[in-house]
Image (cartoon, rainbow, N blue to C red):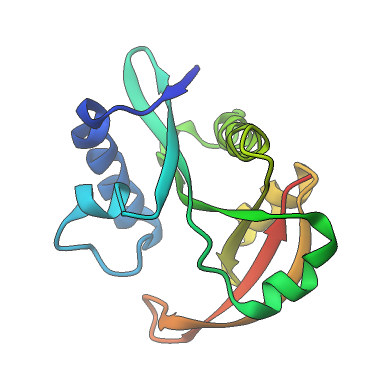
Length: 163
């Protein structure tokens, strides 16, 4: 498994992986009209992919600060924050260190910019929450999201701060 900077040439492979994740997990909740644009939003500062045998199996980015004020208040003594965005791993590559490697890459990308990484996860993301907590991420806030889950519930989010 190799983790490297993502290039624009990687976007078609990343979209294919995101499609598999969407079909399996409902992430993102609604399939975007422009999936490549979703992976390359204006707020994106940096992104990494992980590969196995030359195939993309995961993605993570860091981006602009669009966090609720309550998250900033909860983390005010931890320094400047940057958001983890578009973190996903193809289902067949889970539980073998892929997600942990991408989390570590996000922490390093943030650290190189003098920041701490923060991410959000929907309450039903039990496996993801377990991964974040095992990796030393600390829950700093929980609250309602501004979107609806695939099963029609109002999203409830937990915010985690990097180690």
